[in-house]
Image 1 (cartoon, rainbow, N blue to C red):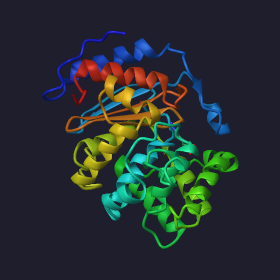
Image 2 (image 1 turned 45 degrees about the vertical axis):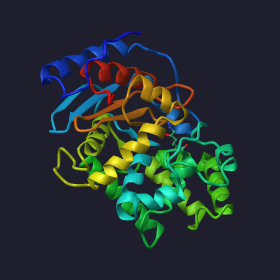
Image 3 (image 1 turned 180 degrees about the vertical axis):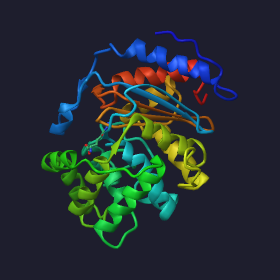
Length: 319
Ligand code: DON
């Protein structure tokens, strides 16, 4: 599909132009029925495939939205980006770089082979194994304390207290044998030294936090603005950590499709299997999208189309 690429230099267009672009793109893609709602976590299959929300929040705090921006869904893998940032902030980016890595696996998000091929190294914090290894580095004397640090940290990014969806957590804990196996495999290689099953429990909780498309845009805009939440004015992480997080998202945020995504859309981004995507335009703002139908890599179909179109029309593309 051809959509003219607006020059990406300078700021975003006027408020009125952004509002009408979001409304147009919502109308254009809401009928797109490609892809399937995730069902490997059984409760996710209850999502209404029609849900579709678009939120764009600018670095100055201006909010533009269309569709279902207030429906809560589980953050899932998008949590990985923000937990990575919190761990870099409280420990160091170098530590995560050394222990986990920052290169794309080229394989699916829950790949076992990626670990086996790389001497037990999970390669990056955006795939399940690397995210579990990153969660293991979260400060806290007990698992409860680590979890509370994650919950409050992600809430600071969102600018409101985020709560856990107990049903999503229970559903995933019953069916996440593969994540438990990944954690045991990392343990066998000496790549995590905390209790592997406790760590998967915390990781599953972080994935079960509820957010809206609006929250994702606020969280992304915080990374776009050097770690400062544009709605609360609070510095959540340093500018350096925000930069490191965006660099990692650019290469690994959309799993094995990250190269294609960067080529077509040109923004650091992260997706989750409940249907959320956050895409960040450094210095400008961020897009939060929500629509549950996914492609085979686990990325929201309408969300990807919307990001493609919005990024081009508004000149958000980095390049
Ligand atoms: O660990 C899992 O499989 C899920 N909690 C999260 C996976 C996910 O969101 C992959 N995303 N596209």
